[in-house]
Amino acid sequence: MRFRVSLRPFFLSLCAALLTACAGGPAPNITLIPDATDELSSKDGLFAQEVKWKRSKPGCEGECPSLEVKTLVFAGNRELTQLVDHALAMMTGVNEDGPPPYEDIAGFEDYFWQVAGSRDSVLLGATLRYRSKYLTVIELDSWQYFTGAAHGIGATQFLNWDNARRVLVPLEQILVPGSRGQFNAALRRAHARWLASQPDAQADPETWNRLWPFQSSENYAFTDQGIVVKYDTYQLAPYSYGQPELLIPFNELEGVLKVDYAPLRSD
Image 1 (cartoon, rainbow, N blue to C red):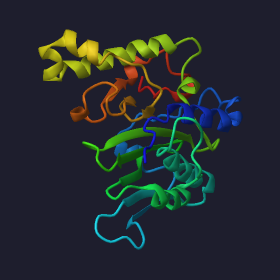
Image 2 (cartoon, rainbow, N blue to C red):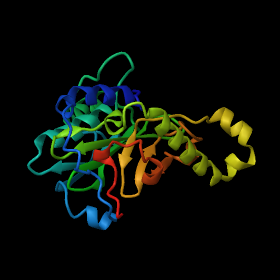
Image 3 (tube, rainbow, N blue to C red):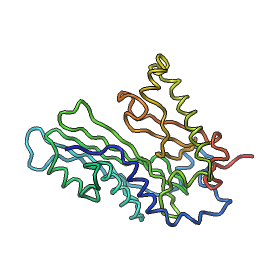
Image 4 (cartoon, rainbow, N blue to C red):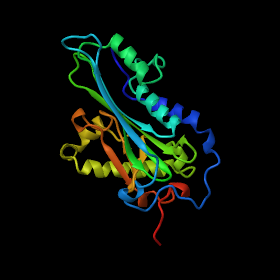
């Protein structure tokens, strides 16, 4: 049994399907990102209830495959709850040739027990990464170990949800038209700052850059400090480095973020 790890194309198509209502945009004088600490901005926003469970294959004895789920249910928002459930299930993936034969975690569980090896293990998780009156940012994580493998593999995907429009907000939606190059340049600077804090990268930068070159990404998340971009295992660094996060402060995105998504100024 083998699962797909990177689901970037899936999320791009998912955003395209759900963004019909985004074309109009909010009033120009509305900002979606408050100038506040996380403690303040988290007072508003959607209420979420955590649901956790862990199971082994029914009827199995000895070494058995396991599935652990830590997901979120949003009261009064069935579409976001279903989206999270569906997206987590799609982060498993069974091949590169077509969509998985299931639509949600319950369907994946049924399939998993049929095909899993004796030591296969899957962990699916959803956590609130950022919450405000206007935006809900959810971090989706998958970790999968396959029987006989040297180690498990993790992947992450952010969902930036517009609370009022009830749609996902992809990266291109928050950028001023024609500013993707400026965003990538800011992301590259964030990558350089991250490299400066990594002793292995500093010890032999030529080899590091050849093996782990900079990559742009659309896996972004709003925070109070700026935009975070997170990478899957092996995208920017060896396995031991996990899933690197690069932070672009808001002050480096002036003229890049649309006014709707720029933080409030105190002046």
